[in-house]
Length: 230
Image (tube, rainbow, N blue to C red; front, side, top):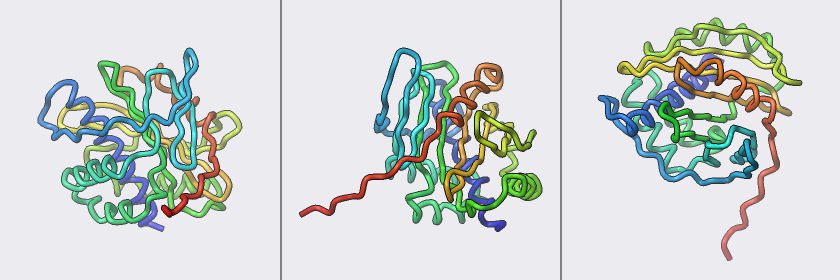
């Protein structure tokens, strides 16, 4: 079970690295930049909302975000750089690379001065684990598994719409780049999903409703079978 929570820890570090590098592209810094390929843009838009469709998932974010299923190039670039910056997480890269169902969607809003990023992952934890038990195990184990640049500052069981979630707040400081991660873990069918939303510290008041909207609008959708080439 401890290894499963290293997956949550690695996802937190991976998401933090991604947003730090988006900021690095906007304003050069010592953080090595990982250039994401253009978003695969599986999106439906109206005047104020964008629905992002990933691999077997969809959710709603404000207009300005772009995203869809992460490409293998994006995933490899981010995980490779994450392993360099956070050696304690390096062993998990092999699992992430070998399990394409782990990372389901990426959404990025890079139009703002302070970029934002959303990652949706399927966490390899049995879907029948009670939320309260999941919270207690995360609160006990996760702090010791995070890289030193990441600090768990809040954890609780919360209700967002009709969902009961484990809500986590992480403070991040990577080479002077400071931001927060709002994280929600919840059951959907027989699976556990993790929403990770990263934003600048000073935007917390605007960010919390966006995070709640992502969790509330989240849907697991059937994936289309791949037809082998003839």
